[in-house]
Every structure is written in structure tokens, then in C-alpha cells.
Image (cartoon, rainbow, N blue to C red; front, top):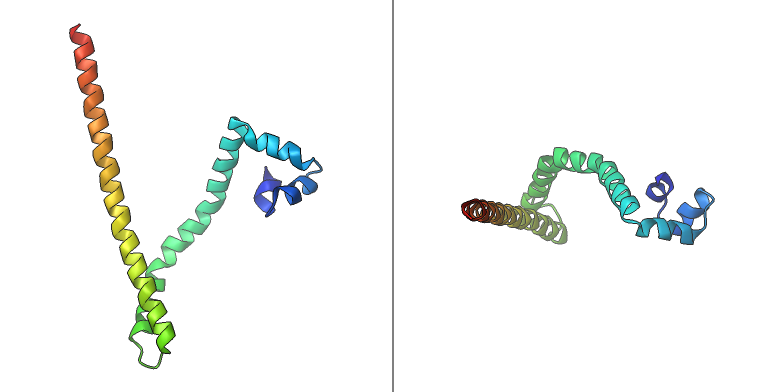
Length: 122
């Protein structure tokens, strides 16, 4: 699994751990291996996500400074503005998605409670 995480292709990972490429593809098709590999990738990426979250305010501040500086070339200013707008839009979309998921979860829980209540009455 470490070879799959370290190398950019399955072929390179197979060579690194001295197994045939088809063997790795067969392992990747197994649900338990696939789950473990997905979890290992998620853990490995977690540090990058933490760093991105830590430096996000600085990045937005830098984009805002570039967008507001008249000495900045117009293409760079436009790109900075688009980056700010994109981050803002994605933040709104994520908040809306979280709200929708929470509503669906609440409705599912209420439905399950109602079904359980009906079952107990029988």
C-alpha cells in the first residue's frame, strides 16, 4: 500500500514492491483493500488540508492586495479577483450543501422514529 501512495502509477508501485501490475489491480478491486487504501490516502492528504486551512486567510489577503494594487498588471488583478470570487462562491455552496444534508438527515431520523413508533403499536 505504501508503494501505491508513493508512486504516481500502479505500474511504478508494482515495480517498487516487486509484484505484477495485475496483482495490484486485483488487490485494488477487493473491497477491504480498497477501503484501507482510501483511508490511507485520506490520512496522507490530511496534513495538506490542514496546511491549506491554516494559510487560507493569508492567501485571500494576498489576493486582495494584488487586486487592489494599481501597479499590479491587469491580468494578475483579474485573476486575483476571480480567485476571491471563486472562494466566496464555493464557501456559500458548501454552507448550503451542509444545510441540505443536515435537513435530509433530520428528515430521515424523523421518518425512522415514526416507523419505529408504528412498529411498536402493532
